Amino acid sequence: MSCKKVLGLSAMFMLAAVSGAEAHVGVGVVSGTVAGFTHPVAGLDHVLAMIAVGVLAAQQGGRALWSIPLAFVAMMLVGGVLGVAGIAVPFVEQGIMGSIIVMGVVVALGRAMPMPLAMAMVGLFAVFHGHAHGTEMPVDASGALYGLGFAIATAMLHVSGIAAAVSAQKFARQVAPVLVRIGGGIIATLGMAMLAGA
Image (tube, rainbow, N blue to C red; front, side):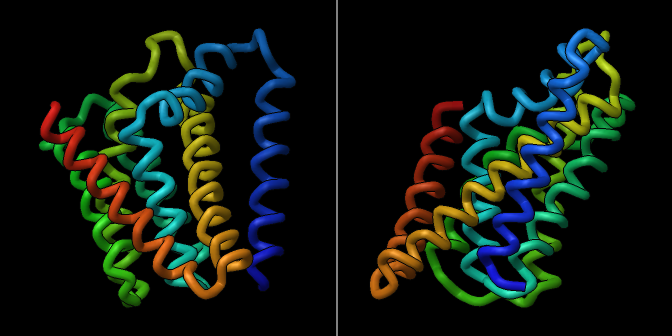
């Protein structure tokens, strides 16, 4: 499947999911899906990490375009369940900051990674992000709707990262790899600055 088709299908899925969520306003969605959706996009730490996952997926290419984001979302939901259940995960904040730094550095290095290693890396970091989302779920929210919300927002941020990297490749083919690597370096630097300021 071509990159354009992947991006198109992803965008259609996201729009359909968000439209479906908005169609039921007043049935617990305000404290459910919408709350879940806004949580990842409201924090710069989550936004940087999600975009880095998308950029990494585009940089790796091929099946990584969907398998890396899918691994992240799946393990993030696992982390979310742990958070909602009150099961402690150590070093959550450090794990979130580490995800920004490590994934930014990986993108900046521009090396191809074995697919299982890339999926394991993003999956591990996803547990920390999911746990943070889960522990901050509003008390009156439906866990399923809240999880749907943050899964949709996360996937949309992944698609944004993929689209940015693919656009660079399309419009600046000669310098695209350098631009993507610089973007990774910027993400890692912002992560280190956030960690230092924490």
